[in-house]
Image (cartoon, rainbow, N blue to C red; front, side, top):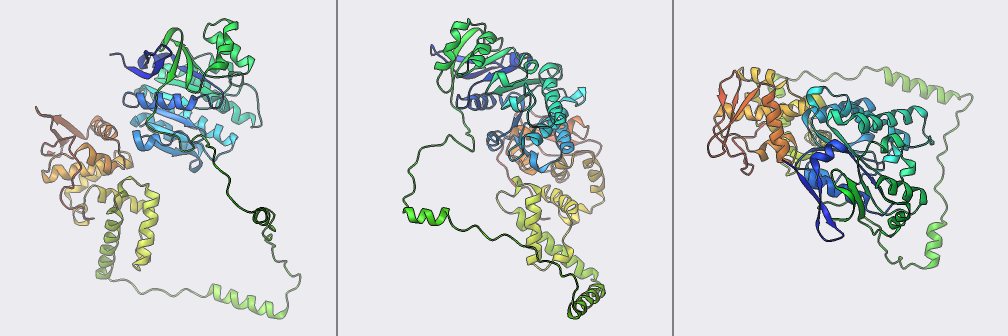
Length: 499
Protein backbone atom coordinates (compact mmCIF):
# COMPACT_ATOMS: atom_id res chain seq x y z
CA UNK A 1 0.00 0.00 0.00
CA UNK A 2 1.36 3.41 -0.99
CA UNK A 3 1.06 6.12 1.67
CA UNK A 4 0.81 9.60 0.15
CA UNK A 5 1.49 12.57 2.44
CA UNK A 6 -0.22 15.76 1.32
CA UNK A 7 2.28 18.59 1.63
CA UNK A 8 0.15 21.36 0.11
CA UNK A 9 -0.58 22.43 -3.47
CA UNK A 10 1.45 22.94 -6.60
CA UNK A 11 1.62 26.31 -8.30
CA UNK A 12 -1.05 24.99 -10.70
CA UNK A 13 -3.41 24.30 -7.77
CA UNK A 14 -3.17 20.49 -7.79
CA UNK A 15 -2.51 18.57 -4.52
CA UNK A 16 1.21 18.06 -3.86
CA UNK A 17 1.76 14.55 -2.48
CA UNK A 18 4.89 12.93 -1.05
CA UNK A 19 5.34 9.14 -1.24
CA UNK A 20 6.23 8.18 2.34
CA UNK A 21 7.55 4.70 1.52
CA UNK A 22 9.80 6.14 -1.19
CA UNK A 23 10.99 8.83 1.22
CA UNK A 24 12.04 6.16 3.74
CA UNK A 25 14.34 4.69 1.10
CA UNK A 26 15.73 7.87 -0.48
CA UNK A 27 16.04 10.61 2.21
CA UNK A 28 15.31 14.37 1.91
CA UNK A 29 17.27 17.64 1.90
CA UNK A 30 15.55 20.99 2.59
CA UNK A 31 17.27 24.34 2.02
CA UNK A 32 16.08 27.90 2.55
CA UNK A 33 17.21 31.14 4.14
CA UNK A 34 15.91 32.13 7.55
CA UNK A 35 12.22 32.97 7.20
CA UNK A 36 11.70 30.90 4.05
CA UNK A 37 9.42 28.40 5.84
CA UNK A 38 11.77 25.42 6.43
CA UNK A 39 10.51 24.70 9.93
CA UNK A 40 6.90 25.04 8.76
CA UNK A 41 7.62 22.52 5.99
CA UNK A 42 9.17 20.07 8.46
CA UNK A 43 6.23 20.50 10.84
CA UNK A 44 3.74 19.80 8.03
CA UNK A 45 5.65 16.67 7.03
CA UNK A 46 5.87 15.42 10.62
CA UNK A 47 2.19 16.04 11.37
CA UNK A 48 0.99 14.34 8.20
CA UNK A 49 3.22 11.28 8.65
CA UNK A 50 2.85 10.90 12.45
CA UNK A 51 0.11 8.23 12.22
CA UNK A 52 2.17 6.13 9.83
CA UNK A 53 5.78 6.04 10.98
CA UNK A 54 7.92 6.52 14.08
CA UNK A 55 9.73 9.87 14.21
CA UNK A 56 12.53 11.63 16.03
CA UNK A 57 13.49 15.30 15.71
CA UNK A 58 16.88 16.81 16.52
CA UNK A 59 15.65 20.25 17.60
CA UNK A 60 18.35 22.85 18.39
CA UNK A 61 15.90 25.68 19.20
CA UNK A 62 12.99 23.87 20.88
CA UNK A 63 10.65 24.67 17.97
CA UNK A 64 9.06 21.20 17.78
CA UNK A 65 8.30 20.40 21.42
CA UNK A 66 4.62 21.23 20.80
CA UNK A 67 4.35 17.95 18.85
CA UNK A 68 4.40 16.15 22.19
CA UNK A 69 1.02 17.47 23.31
CA UNK A 70 -0.72 16.92 19.99
CA UNK A 71 0.86 13.72 18.66
CA UNK A 72 2.34 12.04 21.74
CA UNK A 73 6.04 12.60 21.01
CA UNK A 74 8.30 12.16 24.04
CA UNK A 75 10.15 15.46 24.59
CA UNK A 76 13.70 14.88 25.89
CA UNK A 77 15.45 17.95 27.32
CA UNK A 78 19.07 17.18 26.48
CA UNK A 79 20.34 19.67 29.06
CA UNK A 80 19.08 17.39 31.84
CA UNK A 81 20.82 14.22 30.62
CA UNK A 82 24.36 12.96 30.11
CA UNK A 83 25.68 11.76 26.77
CA UNK A 84 25.55 8.16 27.97
CA UNK A 85 21.97 8.65 29.12
CA UNK A 86 20.97 10.07 25.74
CA UNK A 87 22.60 7.17 23.92
CA UNK A 88 20.56 4.76 26.02
CA UNK A 89 17.45 6.86 25.38
CA UNK A 90 18.02 6.58 21.62
CA UNK A 91 18.33 2.80 21.86
CA UNK A 92 15.17 2.48 23.97
CA UNK A 93 13.20 4.79 21.69
CA UNK A 94 13.86 2.43 18.78
CA UNK A 95 13.21 -0.71 20.80
CA UNK A 96 9.86 0.55 22.08
CA UNK A 97 9.01 2.49 18.89
CA UNK A 98 8.35 5.80 20.64
CA UNK A 99 8.48 9.05 18.66
CA UNK A 100 10.74 11.63 20.31
CA UNK A 101 11.87 15.27 20.19
CA UNK A 102 15.45 15.88 21.35
CA UNK A 103 15.29 19.46 22.64
CA UNK A 104 18.81 20.95 22.60
CA UNK A 105 17.69 24.45 23.61
CA UNK A 106 19.86 26.04 26.28
CA UNK A 107 23.09 24.22 25.36
CA UNK A 108 26.13 25.78 23.72
CA UNK A 109 27.22 24.65 20.25
CA UNK A 110 29.71 22.03 21.42
CA UNK A 111 27.34 20.36 23.88
CA UNK A 112 24.57 20.39 21.27
CA UNK A 113 26.87 18.49 18.92
CA UNK A 114 27.97 15.99 21.56
CA UNK A 115 24.50 15.19 22.83
CA UNK A 116 22.97 14.98 19.36
CA UNK A 117 25.77 12.61 18.33
CA UNK A 118 25.15 10.42 21.38
CA UNK A 119 21.40 10.21 20.73
CA UNK A 120 21.88 9.48 17.00
CA UNK A 121 24.46 6.85 17.96
CA UNK A 122 21.86 5.11 20.13
CA UNK A 123 19.38 5.08 17.22
CA UNK A 124 22.03 3.73 14.87
CA UNK A 125 23.65 1.05 17.02
CA UNK A 126 20.48 -0.74 18.16
CA UNK A 127 20.24 -4.48 17.48
CA UNK A 128 18.99 -5.71 14.09
CA UNK A 129 15.74 -6.99 15.59
CA UNK A 130 14.67 -3.38 16.19
CA UNK A 131 15.45 -1.83 12.80
CA UNK A 132 11.94 -0.44 12.41
CA UNK A 133 11.25 2.34 9.86
CA UNK A 134 11.88 5.76 11.35
CA UNK A 135 12.04 9.37 10.14
CA UNK A 136 15.00 11.23 11.65
CA UNK A 137 14.57 14.98 11.15
CA UNK A 138 17.57 17.24 11.81
CA UNK A 139 16.77 20.94 11.80
CA UNK A 140 19.65 23.38 11.18
CA UNK A 141 21.77 20.46 10.00
CA UNK A 142 24.76 22.72 9.26
CA UNK A 143 25.27 22.94 13.04
CA UNK A 144 25.79 19.18 13.31
CA UNK A 145 27.54 18.51 9.98
CA UNK A 146 29.54 21.68 9.27
CA UNK A 147 31.54 21.91 6.06
CA UNK A 148 34.51 23.53 7.84
CA UNK A 149 35.85 23.51 11.37
CA UNK A 150 34.39 26.18 13.65
CA UNK A 151 34.91 27.27 17.21
CA UNK A 152 34.05 23.87 18.69
CA UNK A 153 36.67 21.24 19.51
CA UNK A 154 37.79 18.77 16.85
CA UNK A 155 36.53 15.90 18.99
CA UNK A 156 32.98 17.28 19.17
CA UNK A 157 32.95 18.03 15.44
CA UNK A 158 34.15 14.52 14.56
CA UNK A 159 31.54 12.90 16.79
CA UNK A 160 28.70 14.94 15.36
CA UNK A 161 29.82 14.69 11.74
CA UNK A 162 30.33 10.95 12.10
CA UNK A 163 26.80 10.49 13.49
CA UNK A 164 25.29 12.57 10.67
CA UNK A 165 27.30 10.66 8.06
CA UNK A 166 26.11 7.34 9.48
CA UNK A 167 22.52 8.60 9.39
CA UNK A 168 22.63 9.70 5.76
CA UNK A 169 25.05 7.11 4.30
CA UNK A 170 24.34 3.93 6.27
CA UNK A 171 21.00 4.60 7.93
CA UNK A 172 18.76 3.30 5.14
CA UNK A 173 19.53 -0.38 5.78
CA UNK A 174 18.77 0.18 9.46
CA UNK A 175 15.40 1.75 8.69
CA UNK A 176 16.56 5.32 9.41
CA UNK A 177 15.39 7.91 6.86
CA UNK A 178 17.32 11.15 7.27
CA UNK A 179 15.53 14.46 6.65
CA UNK A 180 17.96 17.36 6.99
CA UNK A 181 17.20 21.08 6.76
CA UNK A 182 19.77 23.82 6.40
CA UNK A 183 19.89 27.55 5.81
CA UNK A 184 22.89 27.30 3.49
CA UNK A 185 24.10 24.36 1.43
CA UNK A 186 27.59 25.86 1.37
CA UNK A 187 27.84 25.42 5.17
CA UNK A 188 26.72 21.76 5.10
CA UNK A 189 29.26 18.94 4.69
CA UNK A 190 29.08 17.70 1.09
CA UNK A 191 29.22 13.99 1.93
CA UNK A 192 26.10 14.42 4.11
CA UNK A 193 24.12 16.48 1.59
CA UNK A 194 25.10 14.21 -1.33
CA UNK A 195 23.23 11.19 0.07
CA UNK A 196 19.79 12.80 -0.29
CA UNK A 197 17.76 11.96 -3.40
CA UNK A 198 14.78 14.26 -2.70
CA UNK A 199 15.09 18.04 -2.54
CA UNK A 200 12.89 20.92 -1.44
CA UNK A 201 14.58 24.24 -2.17
CA UNK A 202 13.18 27.47 -0.74
CA UNK A 203 14.08 31.13 -0.99
CA UNK A 204 17.79 31.89 -1.03
CA UNK A 205 19.83 34.90 -2.16
CA UNK A 206 23.55 34.05 -2.26
CA UNK A 207 24.89 33.09 -5.69
CA UNK A 208 26.79 30.04 -4.44
CA UNK A 209 23.70 28.60 -2.72
CA UNK A 210 21.45 29.32 -5.70
CA UNK A 211 23.93 27.62 -8.03
CA UNK A 212 24.16 24.49 -5.86
CA UNK A 213 20.37 24.34 -5.52
CA UNK A 214 19.97 24.60 -9.29
CA UNK A 215 22.54 21.85 -9.84
CA UNK A 216 20.76 19.51 -7.41
CA UNK A 217 17.43 20.09 -9.17
CA UNK A 218 18.92 19.67 -12.63
CA UNK A 219 18.10 23.26 -13.59
CA UNK A 220 20.16 25.52 -15.80
CA UNK A 221 22.30 28.14 -14.13
CA UNK A 222 20.27 30.97 -15.66
CA UNK A 223 17.18 29.56 -13.93
CA UNK A 224 18.80 29.81 -10.51
CA UNK A 225 17.61 33.42 -10.16
CA UNK A 226 14.11 32.02 -9.56
CA UNK A 227 15.07 31.07 -6.00
CA UNK A 228 15.23 34.76 -5.07
CA UNK A 229 11.59 35.24 -6.08
CA UNK A 230 10.09 32.44 -3.98
CA UNK A 231 7.72 33.56 -1.23
CA UNK A 232 7.64 32.25 2.31
CA UNK A 233 6.32 28.67 2.24
CA UNK A 234 7.07 28.19 -1.49
CA UNK A 235 9.59 25.51 -2.52
CA UNK A 236 10.94 23.88 -5.66
CA UNK A 237 10.66 20.10 -5.29
CA UNK A 238 12.25 17.17 -7.07
CA UNK A 239 13.02 13.54 -6.28
CA UNK A 240 11.57 10.03 -6.52
CA UNK A 241 9.26 10.69 -3.56
CA UNK A 242 8.09 14.04 -4.96
CA UNK A 243 8.41 14.60 -8.69
CA UNK A 244 10.70 13.48 -11.51
CA UNK A 245 10.93 17.08 -12.74
CA UNK A 246 11.31 20.34 -10.77
CA UNK A 247 7.90 21.21 -9.37
CA UNK A 248 6.84 24.39 -7.58
CA UNK A 249 4.64 23.91 -4.51
CA UNK A 250 3.23 25.82 -1.55
CA UNK A 251 3.24 24.12 1.86
CA UNK A 252 -0.15 23.71 3.52
CA UNK A 253 -1.18 24.72 7.06
CA UNK A 254 -0.20 22.88 10.26
CA UNK A 255 -2.13 21.89 13.39
CA UNK A 256 0.63 22.85 15.82
CA UNK A 257 2.83 25.92 16.03
CA UNK A 258 6.28 26.69 17.42
CA UNK A 259 6.61 28.12 20.90
CA UNK A 260 8.43 31.17 19.52
CA UNK A 261 6.38 32.59 16.69
CA UNK A 262 7.44 35.19 14.16
CA UNK A 263 8.04 38.56 15.91
CA UNK A 264 5.26 41.09 15.30
CA UNK A 265 5.47 44.86 15.25
CA UNK A 266 4.04 46.48 18.35
CA UNK A 267 3.98 50.04 19.68
CA UNK A 268 6.66 51.18 22.10
CA UNK A 269 5.68 51.75 25.74
CA UNK A 270 4.63 55.27 26.62
CA UNK A 271 7.15 56.40 29.22
CA UNK A 272 8.80 59.72 29.87
CA UNK A 273 12.44 60.11 28.87
CA UNK A 274 13.46 60.82 32.45
CA UNK A 275 11.80 57.60 33.62
CA UNK A 276 13.72 55.65 30.99
CA UNK A 277 16.96 57.38 32.01
CA UNK A 278 16.38 56.49 35.65
CA UNK A 279 15.73 52.85 34.78
CA UNK A 280 18.47 52.27 32.20
CA UNK A 281 21.23 54.25 33.90
CA UNK A 282 20.48 53.23 37.49
CA UNK A 283 23.47 52.24 39.56
CA UNK A 284 24.38 48.55 39.21
CA UNK A 285 23.71 46.28 42.19
CA UNK A 286 26.58 46.10 44.64
CA UNK A 287 29.09 43.34 44.08
CA UNK A 288 29.23 40.58 46.62
CA UNK A 289 32.42 41.08 48.62
CA UNK A 290 33.81 38.11 50.49
CA UNK A 291 34.77 38.93 54.09
CA UNK A 292 38.51 39.02 54.56
CA UNK A 293 39.94 36.46 56.94
CA UNK A 294 41.78 37.92 59.87
CA UNK A 295 45.38 36.91 60.13
CA UNK A 296 45.32 36.39 63.92
CA UNK A 297 41.95 35.93 65.65
CA UNK A 298 41.64 37.39 69.10
CA UNK A 299 40.82 35.45 72.25
CA UNK A 300 37.05 35.97 71.96
CA UNK A 301 37.07 34.50 68.45
CA UNK A 302 39.01 31.47 69.68
CA UNK A 303 36.52 30.87 72.48
CA UNK A 304 33.55 31.13 70.12
CA UNK A 305 35.22 28.70 67.73
CA UNK A 306 35.83 26.22 70.54
CA UNK A 307 32.18 26.49 71.65
CA UNK A 308 30.98 25.87 68.07
CA UNK A 309 33.23 22.82 67.77
CA UNK A 310 31.86 21.42 71.03
CA UNK A 311 28.32 21.85 69.78
CA UNK A 312 29.18 20.12 66.51
CA UNK A 313 30.54 16.99 68.20
CA UNK A 314 27.67 16.77 70.70
CA UNK A 315 25.69 13.61 69.95
CA UNK A 316 22.29 14.21 68.36
CA UNK A 317 19.28 13.29 70.46
CA UNK A 318 18.04 9.80 69.69
CA UNK A 319 14.36 9.59 68.83
CA UNK A 320 12.43 6.98 70.79
CA UNK A 321 11.62 3.85 68.77
CA UNK A 322 8.30 3.86 66.91
CA UNK A 323 5.86 1.12 67.77
CA UNK A 324 4.44 -1.13 65.05
CA UNK A 325 1.00 0.45 65.49
CA UNK A 326 2.36 3.98 65.11
CA UNK A 327 4.42 2.96 62.07
CA UNK A 328 1.37 1.39 60.41
CA UNK A 329 -0.66 4.53 61.17
CA UNK A 330 2.03 6.78 59.64
CA UNK A 331 2.23 4.63 56.52
CA UNK A 332 -1.53 4.87 56.13
CA UNK A 333 -1.22 8.66 56.31
CA UNK A 334 1.55 8.54 53.67
CA UNK A 335 -0.78 6.48 51.47
CA UNK A 336 -3.47 9.14 51.88
CA UNK A 337 -1.01 11.82 50.82
CA UNK A 338 -0.16 9.81 47.70
CA UNK A 339 -3.84 9.40 46.90
CA UNK A 340 -4.29 13.18 47.18
CA UNK A 341 -1.39 13.78 44.78
CA UNK A 342 -2.75 11.31 42.24
CA UNK A 343 -6.28 12.71 42.54
CA UNK A 344 -5.25 15.84 40.65
CA UNK A 345 -6.56 15.83 37.05
CA UNK A 346 -3.13 16.02 35.37
CA UNK A 347 -1.26 13.72 37.77
CA UNK A 348 -1.15 10.86 35.28
CA UNK A 349 0.79 12.96 32.77
CA UNK A 350 3.34 14.70 35.01
CA UNK A 351 6.95 13.56 35.24
CA UNK A 352 7.83 11.51 38.31
CA UNK A 353 10.31 14.09 39.64
CA UNK A 354 7.58 16.74 39.87
CA UNK A 355 5.16 14.29 41.51
CA UNK A 356 7.82 13.29 44.05
CA UNK A 357 8.56 16.90 44.99
CA UNK A 358 4.88 17.61 45.64
CA UNK A 359 4.57 14.33 47.56
CA UNK A 360 7.51 15.24 49.84
CA UNK A 361 6.14 18.73 50.51
CA UNK A 362 2.71 17.36 51.44
CA UNK A 363 4.30 14.76 53.74
CA UNK A 364 6.24 17.47 55.56
CA UNK A 365 3.08 19.53 56.00
CA UNK A 366 1.45 16.45 57.57
CA UNK A 367 4.40 15.99 59.95
CA UNK A 368 5.57 12.79 58.19
CA UNK A 369 9.09 13.85 57.26
CA UNK A 370 10.63 10.94 59.19
CA UNK A 371 8.83 8.30 57.11
CA UNK A 372 9.01 9.85 53.64
CA UNK A 373 10.13 7.13 51.18
CA UNK A 374 13.09 7.76 48.89
CA UNK A 375 12.63 8.18 45.14
CA UNK A 376 13.06 4.47 44.19
CA UNK A 377 10.48 3.42 46.80
CA UNK A 378 8.18 6.23 45.60
CA UNK A 379 8.43 4.82 42.06
CA UNK A 380 7.29 1.42 43.34
CA UNK A 381 4.44 2.99 45.29
CA UNK A 382 3.41 4.97 42.21
CA UNK A 383 3.46 1.83 40.05
CA UNK A 384 1.15 0.04 42.47
CA UNK A 385 -1.11 3.07 42.80
CA UNK A 386 -1.52 3.52 39.04
CA UNK A 387 -2.32 -0.18 38.78
CA UNK A 388 -5.05 0.29 41.41
CA UNK A 389 -3.34 -1.95 43.99
CA UNK A 390 -3.87 -1.36 47.67
CA UNK A 391 -1.24 -2.12 50.29
CA UNK A 392 -3.06 -5.29 51.33
CA UNK A 393 -3.34 -6.53 47.76
CA UNK A 394 0.31 -5.81 46.98
CA UNK A 395 1.29 -8.06 49.89
CA UNK A 396 -0.86 -10.97 48.73
CA UNK A 397 1.12 -14.14 47.90
CA UNK A 398 -0.70 -14.41 44.58
CA UNK A 399 0.88 -11.12 43.54
CA UNK A 400 4.43 -12.33 44.02
CA UNK A 401 4.33 -14.03 40.62
CA UNK A 402 2.84 -10.87 39.09
CA UNK A 403 5.65 -8.76 40.57
CA UNK A 404 8.29 -11.17 39.24
CA UNK A 405 6.76 -11.06 35.75
CA UNK A 406 6.43 -7.27 35.88
CA UNK A 407 10.15 -6.96 36.68
CA UNK A 408 10.93 -8.40 33.24
CA UNK A 409 9.54 -5.22 31.67
CA UNK A 410 11.02 -1.71 31.61
CA UNK A 411 10.12 0.19 34.77
CA UNK A 412 7.69 2.57 33.03
CA UNK A 413 5.64 -0.38 31.69
CA UNK A 414 5.30 -2.32 34.93
CA UNK A 415 2.31 -0.31 36.14
CA UNK A 416 0.40 -1.05 32.93
CA UNK A 417 1.07 -4.79 33.27
CA UNK A 418 -0.03 -4.80 36.92
CA UNK A 419 -3.20 -2.86 36.09
CA UNK A 420 -4.10 -5.48 33.47
CA UNK A 421 -3.22 -8.26 35.93
CA UNK A 422 -5.56 -6.79 38.53
CA UNK A 423 -8.40 -6.54 36.02
CA UNK A 424 -7.76 -10.19 35.04
CA UNK A 425 -7.68 -11.36 38.67
CA UNK A 426 -10.93 -9.58 39.49
CA UNK A 427 -12.62 -10.60 36.22
CA UNK A 428 -13.19 -6.97 35.19
CA UNK A 429 -13.42 -5.89 31.51
CA UNK A 430 -10.10 -5.36 29.78
CA UNK A 431 -8.89 -1.75 30.29
CA UNK A 432 -9.47 0.54 27.33
CA UNK A 433 -6.67 2.16 25.32
CA UNK A 434 -7.39 5.44 27.14
CA UNK A 435 -6.99 3.81 30.57
CA UNK A 436 -3.74 2.11 29.51
CA UNK A 437 -2.38 5.38 28.09
CA UNK A 438 -3.14 7.22 31.33
CA UNK A 439 -1.49 4.51 33.44
CA UNK A 440 1.58 4.92 31.24
CA UNK A 441 1.47 8.72 31.58
CA UNK A 442 0.59 9.46 27.96
CA UNK A 443 -2.26 10.92 25.93
CA UNK A 444 -1.46 8.74 22.90
CA UNK A 445 -3.81 5.82 22.22
CA UNK A 446 -1.39 4.52 19.59
CA UNK A 447 1.29 4.27 22.26
CA UNK A 448 -1.10 2.31 24.47
CA UNK A 449 -1.69 -0.22 21.70
CA UNK A 450 2.05 -0.48 21.07
CA UNK A 451 2.59 -1.19 24.77
CA UNK A 452 0.16 -4.10 24.69
CA UNK A 453 1.88 -5.46 21.59
CA UNK A 454 5.30 -5.20 23.25
CA UNK A 455 4.14 -6.93 26.46
CA UNK A 456 2.57 -9.69 24.37
CA UNK A 457 5.82 -10.11 22.42
CA UNK A 458 7.62 -10.69 25.73
CA UNK A 459 5.37 -13.74 26.32
CA UNK A 460 3.59 -12.29 29.35
CA UNK A 461 0.06 -11.87 27.98
CA UNK A 462 -2.14 -13.02 25.11
CA UNK A 463 -4.56 -10.50 23.53
CA UNK A 464 -7.67 -11.65 21.69
CA UNK A 465 -10.54 -9.84 19.92
CA UNK A 466 -14.01 -11.29 19.66
CA UNK A 467 -16.44 -10.89 16.76
CA UNK A 468 -17.55 -7.40 17.81
CA UNK A 469 -14.07 -6.04 18.47
CA UNK A 470 -13.97 -6.41 22.26
CA UNK A 471 -10.57 -7.26 23.71
CA UNK A 472 -9.68 -9.97 26.21
CA UNK A 473 -6.24 -10.25 27.83
CA UNK A 474 -5.04 -13.50 29.41
CA UNK A 475 -1.96 -13.69 31.68
CA UNK A 476 0.34 -16.49 30.57
CA UNK A 477 0.74 -19.36 33.11
CA UNK A 478 -1.50 -17.70 35.72
CA UNK A 479 -4.78 -18.55 33.93
CA UNK A 480 -6.17 -15.10 34.79
CA UNK A 481 -8.23 -13.47 32.06
CA UNK A 482 -10.07 -10.18 31.81
CA UNK A 483 -13.67 -9.97 30.73
CA UNK A 484 -14.17 -8.65 27.18
CA UNK A 485 -13.74 -4.87 27.04
CA UNK A 486 -14.09 -2.19 24.39
CA UNK A 487 -10.59 -0.84 23.48
CA UNK A 488 -12.08 2.45 22.30
CA UNK A 489 -14.19 3.10 25.38
CA UNK A 490 -13.69 6.24 27.44
CA UNK A 491 -11.51 5.80 30.51
CA UNK A 492 -13.38 4.60 33.58
CA UNK A 493 -12.10 3.63 36.99
CA UNK A 494 -12.52 -0.03 37.88
CA UNK A 495 -12.76 -0.92 41.50
CA UNK A 496 -11.02 1.08 44.12
CA UNK A 497 -7.86 3.00 43.30
CA UNK A 498 -6.88 3.17 46.94
CA UNK A 499 -3.20 2.79 47.50
